[in-house]
Amino acid sequence: MNIVVCIKQVPDTTDVKINPETNTLIREGVASIINPFDVYA
Image (cartoon, rainbow, N blue to C red; front, top):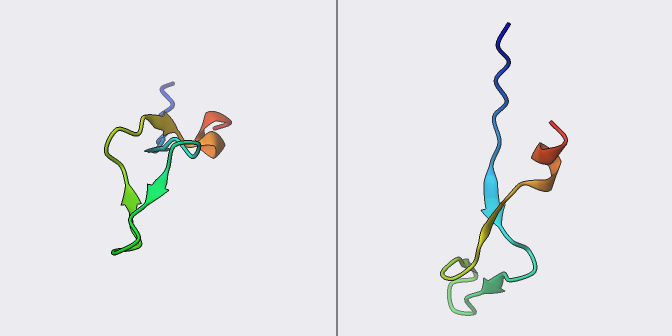
């Protein structure tokens, strides 16, 4: 039997910065990590 689990990569929350003009995340230079909830999947 094969089991497949989908996971999502998200920006590391310790390094996230927000662009004040557009109110969006600045992802440049921020490492991606596995969503902490997906680690338990």
